[in-house]
Length: 158
Image (tube, rainbow, N blue to C red; front, side):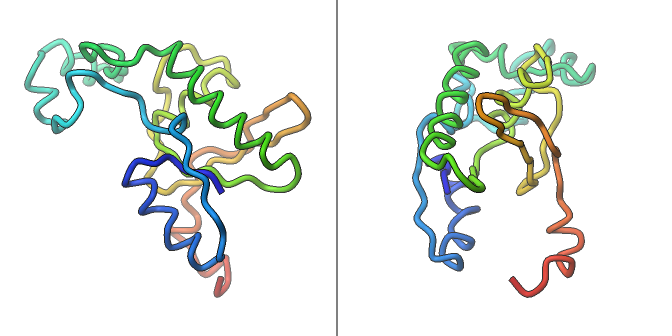
């Protein structure tokens, strides 16, 4: 199992790792995008800082690349790709569990689907996003699955 070292990801994986008695490897490359001067501001404070940001949001346009001093999309995608690929290389057989953030998911999956912009969907918290790995090929199987939350009885007592 691999995880971002940011608190919300660590808190998400901890109960599962404990119950599975599994070791977690924390990778900095799986951290959410650095948003420069917006770090540690609330979403409301960010929106209040610039009317253009509000307008972008109203038009379903991503805003994070407009953060002053923030991490740019090409560098973010490269970092995330490096993190996911290192997790896959560490476990070449079987399933690989990666716990990360919505921006990280978009950064890795977007290029696989040919999506150029930074955020093309908003993953639900604790959603499952599945990829199939066949050699050097990565294929999206499923995005934003929350069945384990809506219908946990389907998964037995585990």
